[in-house]
Image (cartoon, rainbow, N blue to C red):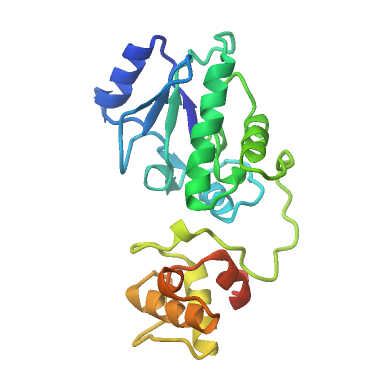
Length: 250
C-alpha cells in the first residue's frame, strides 16, 4: 500500500514514521521512500499505516481482480498490507521526482516478485479507505502499469467503475500468503470440501472456514498426488495445484 507523508524533509519524515505521534504509536509504515529514491526501512510485522478499509477491496487484492469502489471501513488493513510512506506534502503541487517514483516501482515490484504476486497486489491508500486521497500527484493505474512492465508482464487495464459482472465458476488462486494460521474465509471451507471429494481429506472435524493444520496436511496429500515433492508438497497451496483442484467460487 502506497501513501504520502504530508511532511517534508527526509529526516523529519523518517523520524515521524518510526516513532509515531500522540495517539498513534510507530512504526507508521514499513519503509519511507524519500525524494532521492532512497528507501528507509523503519518497521517489520504490523505497522499502523492502513487502518480500517473496505473488505471488498481486500478480497479483490487477494484475488488480484479489478478493484471495487472503497465505500466501507470494515477490515483491518494493518494486518494484511505492507506500507510505504513517500515523502510528499500531498497538496497536488509538491513534485514527485522520477527517482522517487522509480523507487516506489522497484520496491513494490520486489515484494510482488518475492511472493509471486502481480501488479494488482499493490494499491494506494485512497483505494482502500474511504475519504483518503493519498498518494496524490500520480495515478495508481499508471504506477501499476510501470510495475507490471518491471515484472515482465502486461500492464493491467485501468479499473473501470465497479461492475458486478458474472462470477467465475472456480475460485481464483488467492496467493500463497492467504493461507496462514488465523485466516478465516469461505474459500477455505470450499477448498476443504474439494479435498475431501478427491479423497485427500485428513480432517477429524470440518472442513471449516479457518485454516488449520488439518487443511495443510490434506492439501499436502493433494500436492503429492499431483506429482509435487519436497517443499513443493508442503501443504501450502500454489497456483498450479490450486487451479487443478477447481475450488467452486465462494
